[in-house]
Amino acid sequence: MPGGTDWQRIFDDGSTEIEAHYAIETGDGALVEVHSAGIRSGPPEVMAALLAGEPVDASQVYFRTAIRLISSAPQHRALTRKMHVGVGRREPSRVLIDVHSID
Image 1: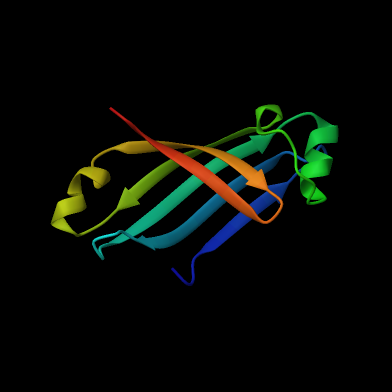
Image 2: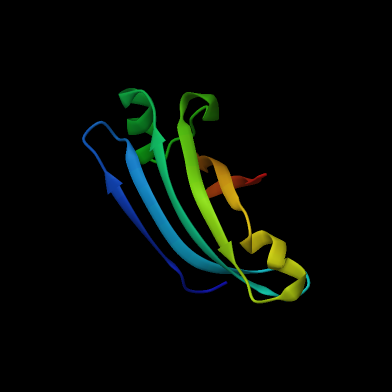
């Protein structure tokens, strides 16, 4: 959805602390608020390539986030009762995050 915000602290070695706050709309039209905080790190040469917008092998980068989902939609209440972990990868034009619930 439009809007949202994120902060990144990029360190000298290219490692990054990430915080994000945004909303998504589910397939059934419900709104879900997303809070995410994570770390992206790897060998300095890999991080330099990543920051330069070059494609890198995702196995060379540690990219994990702790995710909290919030929704008032009854059909998604279970999302709000668990913590989630994201495993991310940065591509030159986008970020992809696979989200896993922790039981």
